[in-house]
Length: 256
Ligand code: A2H
Image (cartoon, rainbow, N blue to C red):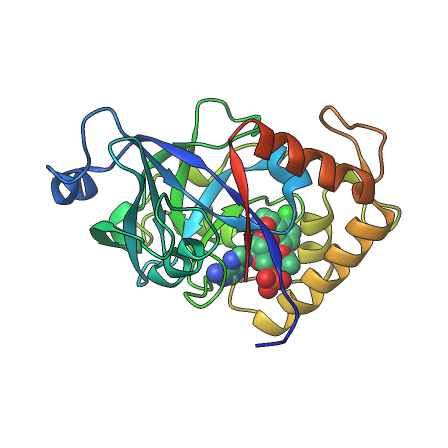
């Protein structure tokens, strides 16, 4: 790990409906009327309009932590909960009460509301093998227009839906153009994955290269083509969208 601090935007995706496995395990553990949120950490808040699902690592162990008793609960890794407890995110400094433990595979299929996403009906929690337990919250929201990892994973999930035990339609939501770039058009991740002939989310080396290209082009040359900040550069829009999400209590700052 480096010495620089990563300033993430932690987004709050509210649970609308648990799958049966999770529902059974959570019986009696979350008070009636409380809200549970999946909390992905992102570096690209300006792309949140295009969220199509949210990833967890299928074999990672997660917790549901009590942020405000009876009211607000977060689904994140233990490591992230500990970090958040020292960033004034929980009600008591240094404390992060865990009310339930779940493995990623047990929450696949959960329906959540993704703030700003055009998919107002909600998006699904889906599995991604490359999610690292040691980074962010262990939860990653998926924006296949601008993240090559997300794009490659969504394609694979749709192709092998039975193998992943998901409904194919969960991985086939519309991919929204959000950012126009001079070199890669308005679906940067799709363009790079296709032109670099990346066939699988396991092509780690090529995906790392695509991620680097996408990030640089998007940040330094990208222009918004969707949302309230259409016409602004990505550099300008990024802090504006972030602040808007924080002000509406749909996100908070998280650093590590
Ligand atoms: B980004 P950095 Cl549109 N495991 O958000 C794997 N990847 C993780 C993760 C984890 N535990 N936690 C966060 N991430 C992803 C959006 C996005 C992201 C776009 C384009 C690029 C991009 C939508 N996914 O990231 O290593 C999250 O995906 C490429 C840099 O801390 C987060 O931002 O620099 C980013 O990686 C954080 O990566």
